[in-house]
Image: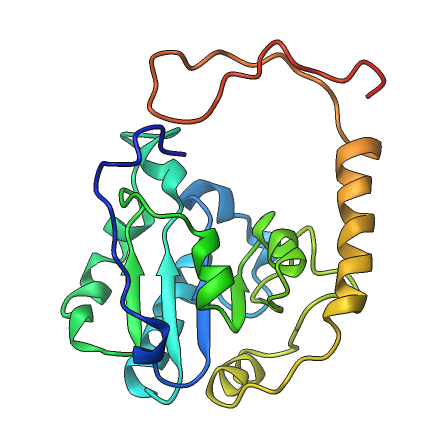
Length: 219
């Protein structure tokens, strides 16, 4: 997302300084997560974030890291960010040693979280639910998304069950099974449910690589 990796670098503290299990939440861009039919445990994606923040403020046996989506300040620069919506709930957040918030404007490799911090990935909906599995981190779903199909990841029937898991997470031993399901989901979305569209180049932007000339003819 950031072509210039020297800007706004975020330095996270060592994993050893986070108590208990570390849950890492990857919120969608605001409008991307705002789909009413997904809201089976929480009223909205904002409600989800507010409630997990409140939970970890009150329960410091485990830890929470929130990585706001970097596209909010690159691809969709100028739009309302999740962080701005939640600003009242983030006041004084640095006082909690079990919570860290990485802004969408911070230059930070989110995959470092998978490798060195995450015990569980918290998602509302998004492709991160598949990426997490391939990086051997179990996914905890908070909504009806594209990827919480039967027998994939950790799913709950109620908000109470979800919050109880954040307090007392159980060991997860189905990651190998999840990898098989994730492969099937990727195949479906990439090859059976996709269409090729040319895209605008981004020569003057601060993100990504222009792949407008690349496509696969058989898709």
